[in-house]
Image 1 (cartoon, rainbow, N blue to C red):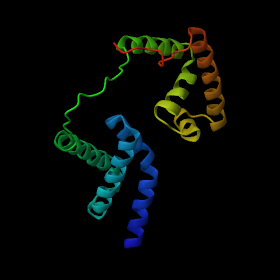
Image 2 (image 1 turned 120 degrees about the vertical axis):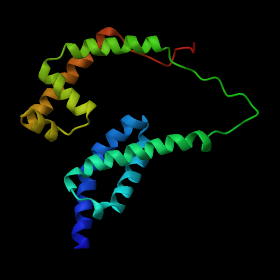
Image 3 (image 1 turned 180 degrees about the vertical axis):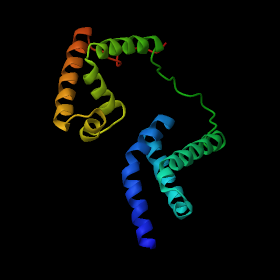
Image 4 (image 1 turned 135 degrees about the vertical axis):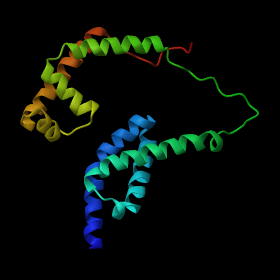
Length: 175
């Protein structure tokens, strides 16, 4: 019986890990911290796996654990990670936020030139990080259709963005 529950958790963890990793990245904005957060979330969920009444709610419970772990980390971070130094910090080069707005406008214009199905394909594949097969299932297409839509959409985006000029951040000076 314990082996069946262990296998059930292993299947859940394997299936839910990519989604949890995307959620953790959106919460923390750092892939390394996201990986740590997912690992700690799955560990905490594993400890309570036998206590779960409804396994169909395990994903929601994992998200709740993740949020609580992140909040706890952020609260303790103020006290544990601050290091005082006698030397002033190095100058930090910052990007001009107005340049980023311009880049976003160019990108949104390029996405607007795509058809609705190509735009949806790009959204599912790159924003949500879904596989071609998963995207096909969501959109009601064959995976080969999704792959060809992805190639066509990326070709269109590259052409539109090439006409607007390269965005090179290396020559920007701090403001």
